[in-house]
Length: 116
Image (cartoon, rainbow, N blue to C red; front, side, top):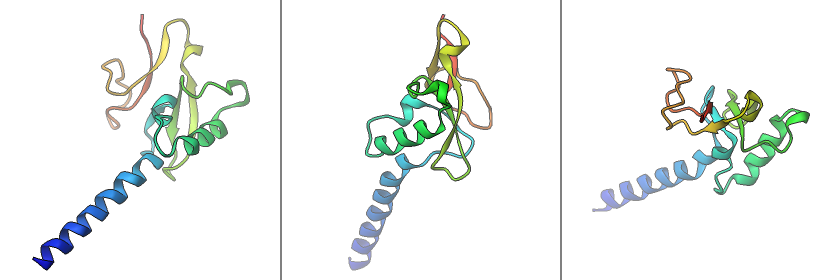
């Protein structure tokens, strides 16, 4: 019984640690919409700083409608595109949307897509 309790405590600690750490990290090479990184979780202010640092000077204030690529350190991103700059009807789409078929190596990543 002691072994089972120790296992349960260890498993709970492991799962809690993963759940807490994941929102602070991104997947190397994965494309994200700014609004998905700014999801209101416990790391929202951290991601706001990271996105602002990644945005070019002429794109400040466009965090939500921009796509960002996760860097190899998995905690910083680089600006890719401001979706509305592509023209009318272009928005940042969640990777679960069937309009996002960007890279077969990273299924489910976000994209800029025309909603018209």
